Length: 416
Image 1 (cartoon, rainbow, N blue to C red):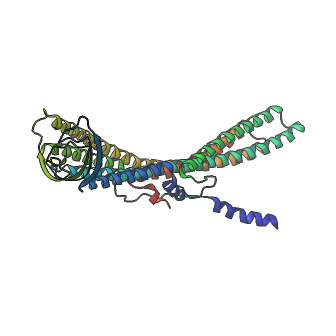
Image 2 (image 1 turned 30 degrees about the vertical axis):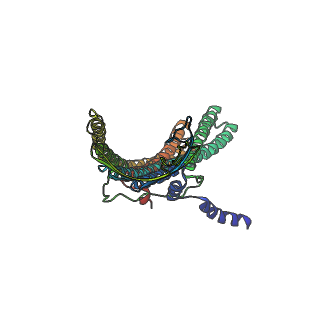
């Protein structure tokens, strides 16, 4: 009774401990350390925007000083204390603040695109490791079946050897094939564990038990540009605004300021009949408006602006090339889907043929009609055909994710 209950509940336990491909991706997007870096970078850019907006407000400064002077004069006391408060406002700067603000806005936009681009690239990495783990697990299963079959044949041939119906050479050949298969099992087990550990590193979840997931068959997918291209476009806009901010330096700069100060004097020089502080002003309020304009700097700012504009042209050239590359990769990804479909058909036929051949040769081998070489070759071909078929099926899923990726989509959204 206990055995029945154990067998009944184990599948449910494993299912509860397993994770789907989408779950791995979503958890990675929320908890991966590199993803958190992108989020913090977005927040940093937002604060930079807020800092630039603050430049539109007046600045208010307060200060104080206390000085000792020797020798002292009528208008220069020995000790003087000052306090002041000053407010300043930039009335016009040629549009520099507006250009800087727009530039920071484009930087913030680029940081958002960076986060999305990283999410998609991380999704692709998870998909590759996920299906690699599936591929290796399928190969491992086929190798274990082969190991079980070889072990059974070794036991059978050893019995025949005791009765003189088989030779030690036949036993040794089967044992050699079995030992080599055990090595392949160990090697494949390592590959499975490597893929699982990489999945765990990226997603933060155990990848020991993985549920079966597939991607939707591609239909009429609307093509979109990569986030990486959008990042470059946002950077080009930022550079353009930086050039405008530099050019604003040649326009008038208008500033308004209001400063109030109050002073206290000690150790004064007195003149008979006149108060010691009659010549000293103990408070003053000063309102000032200033206008200045750069009329000559030997082309310094103009050349700086021109250098920035060349950087923008370089980025535009890079964008054009990136668009060509994405279109090419999208075209090849679409072609890769149809090619892999045909490969699946071929692998399925090869598996069917190898399985049929193995069944026939196994019967003949056990009846002594064929030698061990023919039997081992048939067993090897069937094992390889099983592994190849599963590998092709999972490779098709990876190809679908790559197709969606080069279409400018998030592959996660197309997981069944």
